[in-house]
Amino acid sequence: MKDEQKKGLRWTSQFIHTGHDIDPETQAVVPPIYRATTYHQPDPWNPPRWDYARSGNPTRHALEDAMAQLEHGVRGFAFASGMAALTAAFLLFDQGDHLLVTEDCQGGTQRVLRGVFQRLGIRVSYVDTSRLDQLEQALTPQTRAVLVENFSNPFLHVADIRRIAEWAHQKNLLVLVDNTFLTPYLQNPLTLGADLVIHSATKMISGHSDVTAGIIVAADEALAKRVYFIQNACGLALSPDDSYLVWRGLRTLPVRMERAQASADALARALVDTPGVTAVYYPGLPDHPGHDVAVRDMRGFGQMVTFRLQRPDWITDLVPHLDWIVIGAGLGGTETIISLPELHCHAALTPEERQAREITPDVVRVSVGLEDPHDIIRTLTEAVKAVSTSRPGAGPTMLL
Ligand SMILES: *Cc1c(COP(=O)(O)O)cnc(C)c1O
Image (cartoon, rainbow, N blue to C red; front, side, top):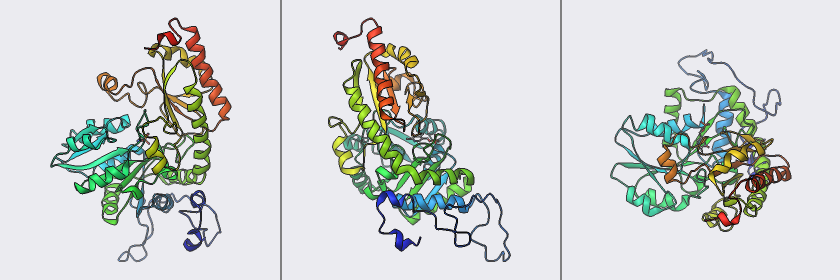
């Protein structure tokens, strides 16, 4: 289909018709997987479009192009993992530079900052990016950028990217947004003022718990050139086979997100009414502190739900009752996955840091999958009920 024909398509349809044209020679409807690492150059003084796979690959390009369009940026880049994408973003900075980073960001982001980039002389302050006063306080003359997770982990604080970008651009800072939890389907940070959007495509975008991948989309050409230099120079790009799988994931992303977030919403409401649950964090709930920003800037509330059990020691009893639900570190797959932030996504923090951020053993994070919502809600609420009625000290009298 020609680009002009695609212009009138609604948002969901764009995910199905972006990033690949019907092959004029074969009429194939999906891009081929090109495994070649090198390309013949009959006229080496005028190098061809493709020359060497680390520098460029047509299958990877189909994905990068689709992501650039769906995120409303100028160019996309596919990386070997979400961490490879974040690494490429951090390599934009120099020794002595200072970054402001969302305080309850993904554990892997803190691990690479602490173990690699801080060692190399990049300084980092972790702040509550939903509070401009905290950003202002942490600002130094060397501050170069703000890295925001628009949906923080595990408590799903909602960042007001518009306000952060307005503030940051007055100070000449770059705004980097990790959009993994929302995906381009639910939010486009570049249209809210961000300069770079970063994804772990391992999660919802590929969507089947079978690919490790990352994406960056840049808002302008100058920044895109710098990201491309790093992707190529450091050899961080995604393989052709995995590029194809992520590209394929985009085709079903809207229908998967719609289904999963409808179930997440129903689960959050059911958990609110479940004895033994003392807090439910889901931005779709009207009393969630980020609800209004989410309504204004997002197309939905996503598929992640976090809740707190009445007592931390219940968690060991809960696990055997989870039945068919997967327990592990991932999210965004077809299957419902429960993570215990203390053991999984936030294992890289020290116990003191986890305590300070209230990431205690009573916190349970759910990545709601595509099973029948009744199964998800029944299994989880019955598991909590089973634990809360079998344990001594259970019941509302113990609520402090
Ligand atoms: C998983 C994740 C990452 C890291 O991505 P990988 O693909 O595991 O390397 C980064 N940011 C967020 C928000 C994530 O959930």
